[in-house]
Image (tube, rainbow, N blue to C red; front, side):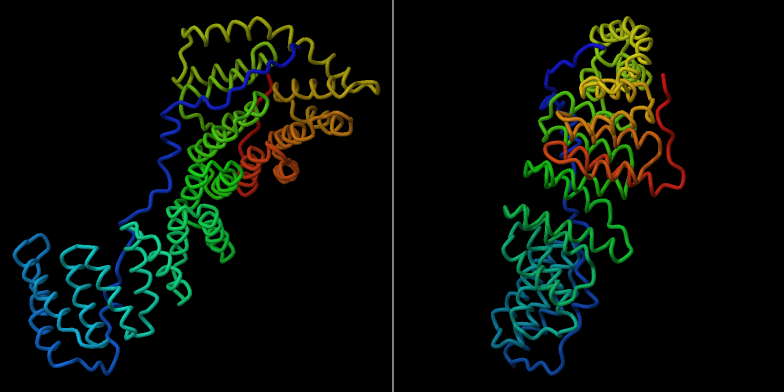
Length: 439
């Protein structure tokens, strides 16, 4: 067995991989719906001034005649509504004028007028208490779209405090905090919304997890990215989601080769490779001089997927190196494992044998040796725990895998969290995928 090389693979993701990672968390403007049925309700006993009534009646007629996209009807309505606003003499007038402006903005499909109208209605203090949550929510979302984050925060929080029933509003508020440079506060709120939804028995929409993941990426927060990624993988364990989460953690973690190897193993077991660069990083981390069998597995998978070409100089060179070492490496495996079980075996011998066994799919034997290595002084505790978790995972022992990954601390915490999320998804699955076959 050849000693591990130490070249770092951090920070070399391709532009397309990063583009895929960044194409997350975009706020969907189509999700904002001003609830017209609720907003049309007027509080009782409005006392409108005579001057306002005289201006408001033709304004209502003009608004009713608006045809979206028809410049003439829109201009006439806007002029009439402006005249009504100019005639406002009290809060009752103000509420009604705001309602006119809101309805005009809705018919003409002009969010800025909708927002102004909502603001007038709320500022008047005359809104029916039953409609306040909807009014605040609509005003907050429209303010968010116009990047008026201070008012967006104010209105959205007011809607939540008033009992707005849709939990997605917390996600919008979280996005507002993040957009207003309060990233930590925003991510905390997103996480709370996800956890609150799950606690109520409903898995949160996939987009919420992706928004958190994208926000963590923008904040260069690797542990938070892993937290959102692990939750997303657990609840939406698609290959694409594992790949996106692993790509972001890989970029932010600035990992060395041994850490990268274990992260790429997650991509391999979930078949979440997005492009040739993923296979290449895995090949470089596995190293044909150290783990020839695993290296060949990755090369063959990449060629079969069409993302790698066997004739490529790098691929053919790695394949030649791995193939040339494979027979001798496999032949030495038994004696190497036997040496690791001797009472005098060093931690390095035990860990090295466990690594070799894991790479050839001998997960049960690897598990026993990782446990033995963890009892030795000088062991890289977090690396051994990560690989013990992988050995558990490969045997379908998902609860034990989660327990091992949860014990990992330090820089490896982020990648162990992703592994833990994937193990949790397998524990929930009705039929778990089979472990990698032995060489």
